[in-house]
Amino acid sequence: MKRILLAVVVLALAAGCASGSDAQRREVLLATTTSFQDSGLLDDLVSDFALKTGYRIRATAVGSGAAIALGSKGDADVVFAHSEQAELDFMAQGNGERRVKVMHNDFVIIGPATDPARARGQGSLAAFRAIAAAKATFYSRGDKSGTDVFEKNLWRQAGVTPSAPWYIEAATGMGQTLQIASEKRAYTIADRGTYLARKGGLALDILAEKEPPLFNYYHVMTVSPAKHPRVNSLGALAFVDYLVSPETQRRIQQFGVAKYGEPLFYPDAP
Amino acid sequence: MELIVQGIVEAARRIVTLDRDVLDAASASLAVSGTATALSIAIGIPLGALLGLGRFPGRNAVLSVVNTGMGLPPVAVGLFVAVLVWRSGPLGGLDWYCTRPAIVMAQLILAGPTVIGLTAVALQSVDPMLRTQLTSLGATGVQSAWLLVRESRLLLISAALAGFGAVISEIGASLMVGCNVKGDTRILTTAIALETSKGEFGTAFALAFILLALVFAVSAVTTWAQQRPRPL
Image (spheres, rainbow over the protein chains, first blue to last red):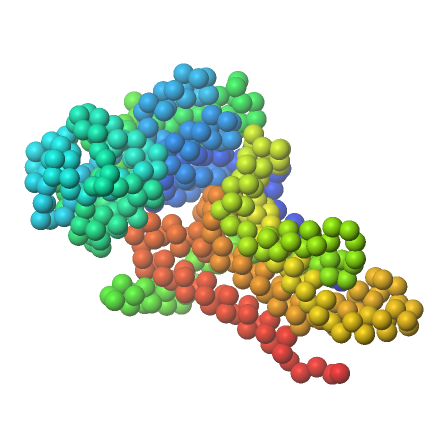
């Protein structure tokens, strides 16, 4: 029995050591949108950042809405999001210290090649109106993620209030939503990165792309140490500096080119 | 079909070449679920013995709570533990969010009741005459409990295995409190979910096969320990 207890204590310590508390200030807690992780860019930058600065990023990929919520409670040191209005509210409420534009990608409106709603080739807003007029099935993320907010904003700009039964909330991540839309021969909207990564297995064509209403900007925000004294402010600022450095910006631009033949993200840092 | 074949080929390749990411995820899974199971045995067997052999007011109520605990929804446990370990939460000072100890804690909550409940049942199913005999031979309560635990060890091994099985294949809680940090809290199940959402089905399949192999290996070793012939 004593031996078992000893083994248990040793194991517990071993598990604990992997993220021991003495090394805590070398750890930066990042709350981020899922597309940053699903594209593979997050893992790439996190290991590069660790190599260059010695900081370890602990990232929780939860969607822009939840990421901003975590930041506003001081539960994260730095927030990476693409949800313009929510970010501005976050800063206005004094939760953030620095907010910097890092990059953008673009959304694509996609649907079955047969395009029963005739949404193709007339721009994003007209495409949305065509889908609504035809009451063609449209899958929304429905999870308050940055993509979800972006899509709902686009419907507003198009002057349409989407409704059931043709408008369906999948309440899941981007990859899954694409899969569902493809299986159901329906329309949806996706960030180009996830679409390119999944394109091979999907029966979905691009119907609208590469125009300003579809551009999607990512910002990084450090959580204010004045409001939340426990945050690792130095680590958070180091991550921001890293993201906007010319070298990292080039790394972002090159990410995915070898695999997809085009960049997934375009650097925007000043 | 092509995807399944691709997946199997990819799985074989990654296992043969000892792929770093796959090894990391597999060892992380073993470390956290092994620790959680060990802790749940250390805590669960004494508590289970107390519940199975003891007689005290409120015992039935406690047993009902434990039995409910055997079917706790992992996402609910994940949410509960996340709220506890967020910096704004009561255990925020530990700074455990997105760390292995947080996953161990969540998995302990999931596996603990299973071990406690099955231990209580196992000890109760020992022939009651044996207990009477032990008492009449002058054994103290603790001594006789220890002998009864040894007597029912085959069932207790099954209890431990049930606890391990529940946590090694668990994803909801581990993802919510561990955050799937590469090389640290990225365990097999969360890695499978991530690779699937990235569209890397081959890698996802490889990881899934490795998870199955791991569960099988642990079960096989335990079953061997349980079933090997022993002196009477």
